[in-house]
Image 1 (cartoon, rainbow, N blue to C red):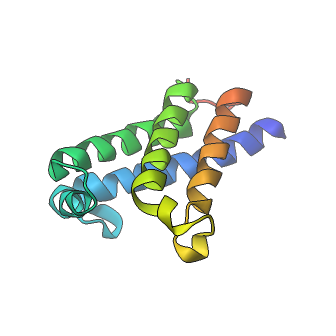
Image 2 (cartoon, one colour):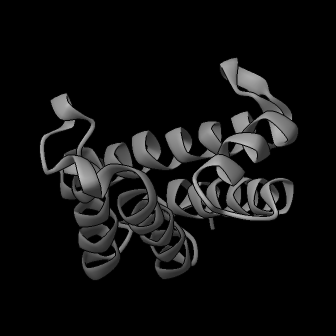
Length: 128
């Protein structure tokens, strides 16, 4: 049952990150695409915005895919952790801990999940 539990965690977190990457890269799932995301990133001090949106989108898309598939789990987890650390330091950290106040609670949960799965391993159900 542990392997099934790890698969569920990996799929939910990994596919969600892939979706966030697709929002940034392609404007899918209600996202703003490279130009829109780039404008927002510039507004929070991450410049050049479109380049940063491209990098963030690729990191989320590829990292999420690796995490979901259970291959190169450390690399996928590192992508998730890096993305969430940037979100904490650039957006959510100043708002305190609680997500209800736009704080970093959710980001920290994702960091813990990614690190925990990386330390445990992906389980038996992996892509190859």
